[in-house]
Image (tube, rainbow, N blue to C red):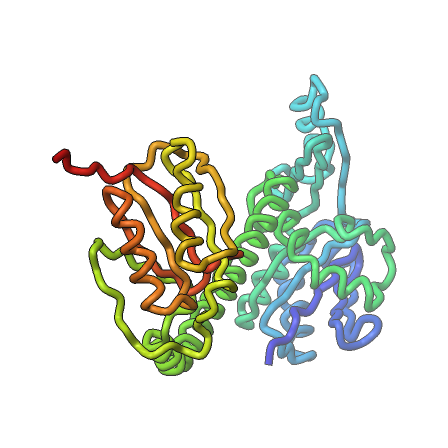
Length: 362
């Protein structure tokens, strides 16, 4: 089972153990002045023995350790990033630390506006790390507690412990075990990039799931779709059909259907003058009236100069009437084209005139 690291809280005169399971420190080791005084190790062998005895006594079970350094062991200063004498201020700060330069752990943390300088005596935590490694324990980070806005030099509470252990960003940029210079902005951008990448992966994953579902749906429904489509191909189309018949062509003399119109006075006819010749449509009307048709309207075509005469019948017109009309038109016009539609709006058939028939000279 995964457990969070434990915290070794290094203070001026003691080392305390903290976990997120209990409030306050679970164990505490006091440093005798004969071994450590004024943040300096006076007896390294004695310090190592003191630490090993303490660690063995408490039987450390956690394999990961975070060493948090108390504010009383930290030297810290903030300077503006744009300062002209920035390098001088940095050097002066570290030169003023009251330890041998070889023993100083340095940290420079930059952002857009400020440069945070942090230093401590690394001799203290390095000796602790050596002892922990002898016990096969893993050190996650060594961080100044001031980066977590914890200024108390006394005990840590449970919120402080959780704040330290859960803030991976600060553990990374404030770690004395990594390079001296850290960039808060770069770290933030890295985290943002990872977040964006995770979102992108999630979107791709969801898209793949949707595609798989659509494929499954298609193959389940495919037989029904093909069956339905196949049935439709055998049905008679509901759209209007128009058949052009080159004259002269006799119409089939089938028995009249119940929907066909046998009473000529009820058949509505439109005659359209398609050539622009004056009186041509009226002449056709007169011939239709001689065949006992009475409901006839005349119209001029927007497009004149038709060469061929066209007649379009609805399905309601019986075959014998169609043949009679076509014969009448063929007697008067040069060429007649015939069409049939299921239904014609407002009329039962429409005649559009073309060129007159030229009679042979005797």
